[in-house]
Each structure stands twice: as C-alpha cells, then as structure tokens.
Amino acid sequence: MEKKKIVEIKNISMTYHTLDGETKAIKDINLNINKGEIVSLVGPSGCGKSTLLSIIAGLIEPTKGEILIKEKKIKGPNKEVGYMFQRDHLFEWRTIIENVLIGLEIQGRVNEKQYKNAENLLDIYGLSEFKESFPRQLSGGMRQRVALIRTLIVEPDLLLLDEPFSALDYQTRLAIADEIGIILKKEGKTALMVTHDISEAISVSDRVVVLSKRPATIKDIIPINLTCPGGVRTPMKCREAPEFRYYFNQIWKELDIHV
Ligand SMILES: Nc1ncnc2c1ncn2[C@@H]1O[C@H](COP(=O)(O)OP(=O)(O)OP(=O)(O)O)[C@@H](O)[C@H]1O
Ligand SMILES: [Mg+2]
Image (cartoon, rainbow, N blue to C red; front, side, top):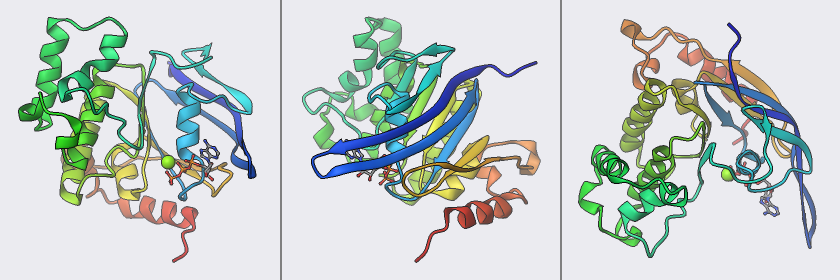
C-alpha cells in the first residue's frame, strides 16, 4: 500500500529582503512527509529551520516553490497545521486555560468536552494548579508545556514543533520528550520537529533530515531503524538500541560542527 502523503515540500527557496540587503535562508528544499511519520530537522544555528516551518505553516510566502497539504496548495495559515513556535507566544492577558483553548476558540469548537480535555492535558503535564494563572507566573518550561498543549488540542493533521523542549531542564526534557514521543506515535500524529539535540532527534523520529548551513539545503535524510530493548519503541528505550551510536556519529559528522 502506498503511504499517504500529508505534506509535500516542493522546491522551496526563500530569500529575505531587508534594508541591509538580502539573506538567502533556504535553497531548493524537497521533502514529503507521510501520515503518521515523525520527522526531525537538524541543522546549524541560523541555517533556516524556523523559516522552513513558517513557510509550511503558511505564515510567510516562499520566494520559490510550493507547499501542498493533503494535495492542496496552501495559500496562507490553515487549520490543517498546528504550529508551536520557537518562542512560546503565550498571550499574557489570558489565563493558562484560556491560552490552551485559543485555537479551538478561533475555530468555534470550544465545548464542555473540549474544556474537560484541556483540563485533563493540563493535569497530565503537571499544570492543573496553574489553570487560572497567567503566563508570567509560570517558569519557562511550564510555559513551553502550555504552548505544546495548545498545539496538540486542536488535533491538526500536521504538527510543526520548533525546538519544543528547549526551555526545559535536562531531566524534564528527557521525560517530556519521551512522553510526547509516545503520545504522537499512539495517536498516529504526523509531525515535523526542529531540534538541536541529536539524541532527541534519533530517539523520537522515523527520519532525520540534516540541513546544511545557510542557505539551508538538504544534506541527508536518514531513516531511523532501531532495535529497542524488549521490542517497545519508546524514545527513552530507543537510546539503548545498539544502532543508536552509529546514527549519532553519522549525524554529528554531517552537521560538521567545529568547536
Ligand atoms: N524576518 C526576517 N527578515 C530578515 N531575515 C530573517 C528573517 N527571519 C530570519 N531571517 C534570517 O534568515 C536566516 C535563517 O533564520 P531562521 O530563524 O530560519 O534560522 P534557524 O535555523 O531557525 O536558527 P536557530 O537555530 O537559531 O533557531 C538567518 O540568517 C536570519 O537572520
Ligand atoms: Mg529557529
């Protein structure tokens, strides 16, 4: 059976024009993402990762190329795509639960059941006591969790996650990445995630896309096949797979980081 394509990124290039001149951010990117797949994007800082996500989300128009979502060309922001930004963009004047519900509110879908669902998610992420608090009362990690719940709750066909765990301390990061990896897989979500963390990319993804330095081009696409201990593929268990090191070294080499 042929896999169902959710996103087709076709020949995308992006050049920013500013008063200081032009910045080539992305060059000739082609990539398809299938239903249920989790794909990670890794690449040097400033290479154009957030730019690519913003183009897929329909927030900025590429200089060249097109994005198809479920075979339809996108022309602007659309409800098929849920985007969790690199910075959390919570609304300071709204409470936490109001922030979580905003996407559904825009779509006119807030009801008793969704409200319960929001409460339940806040509970799972250890935030229930902050339901009526305001964003400024939360730590960076907590704010990021709120942003993630807000993205998950509208159940988009495609999730775009821009360094979703970067504000978390290391231990929480491992736990949350594990949990989210499991949730995404269990619910058959399709996601494109930017991360700086090679181990995280390998442990949660079906494929890792390595980008070159700016302007970003695709250097390599690495399908991840891990034999996880006990046959359970959770991100945490995956880190113990014998192939893990091999992938790590390969991606590290391709990223070509000089210190
Ligand atoms: N709105 C904009 N106008 C002009 N230049 C921009 C704009 N947004 C980004 N850029 C430039 O485009 C390039 C790519 O930026 P982008 O934010 O996509 O990189 P990134 O890979 O997400 O970086 P990081 O790893 O730091 O998050 C950078 O050189 C940046 O300065
Ligand atoms: Mg970025």
